[in-house]
Length: 498
Image: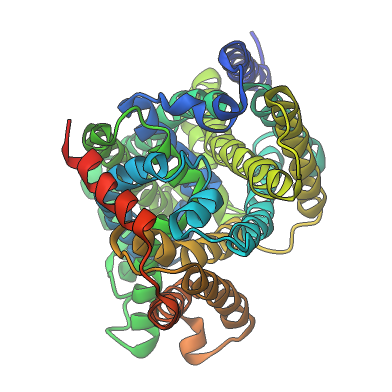
């Protein structure tokens, strides 16, 4: 008989081979710069929905969130509620209009180029600054995925952190390097399905192993009844209120995440956002619900089995390896990689587009040819990945901590501007630039302090201050522009007309 370890390696081998094959298939269909960066604006609704969800969740869904629930109970589930509401509103409010507006406004294929074209910024500052913000926060975000992959290999195979991180990063880099946006999106679909199945199957198997639903709930309650308390067992104190607001504030971040909203820009039509919303939100509810349930059930399972859990963020991994056949457990472990790889492959593409489309093309006086742009795009993917790997070699924060900071940075810097760009005619380039800078700076400054209200998730104050700043500066610098008015009106027509 084969050892359990061999079964695990077989499952991972099958998964890696499938991802590389999909990346190669996408490479054969990628011929130009717009194809590489945006898939030719031809994503079907279901691909966009699953791709947005998978690229959103990252390793924290199957590691960070269940670990937080395992430690603290349902008070940590406010993050899941905030994210679900935020994702729904993002599909409802942003997706159809952003798809239409980016096409109407000089066929913008990146968020920085959209901000510039939307506000008719002649200084190029808005595009350059937003590109730099993307590079800073996404390098941290990509690094968090690499950290998660290293932790995964340590806990699942008793392997070396650096070797595991380099292996996962290398496979992801290969299919992203050649497959581009389409490769990242198609692999996201497979990864999203695997992820959802994994976070649903493992907790159910754990409940059966413990002795059923009633036994599981009774055991958790006897160990720590506060795990079922949405207020953490302390009542509505100022600390609890800050925790709840912080959790819900995660939902605000959706409006400014380039790797997610770029999927909206790639939809075939603005109207496709409606069916994509239904698919995407259903996937999200199932996946987040499974992750929260898994962390909660893990409390009873670990006690029942007498297992010593070293790292709470590995609770789902430990349960899968204990409960399931090694091959099935290997596929669950592959789902962990799916969560990690789907996110940072998408982020690598956005970083590449920021470097090529929004910095190189802006600074280059003569327009480069399509072939050179695609080559440059691939080189930039490689460069960002190398920097992120160097940062991930010696991690100094939890996976959830790294993701949370990068999520806040994008949410505060870009979220208010995306909403104002789509729904307020008077947004100016100076208002957008001021709001963006204030949002980014607030996130860095707020995160540097501790205690009292500084424990509030930095996304919320950053978002509010950026929004207020953008509105005030825009009102002070507004001048009517016929082209902006025409594009704004045309966008409304494209959204409602089928």
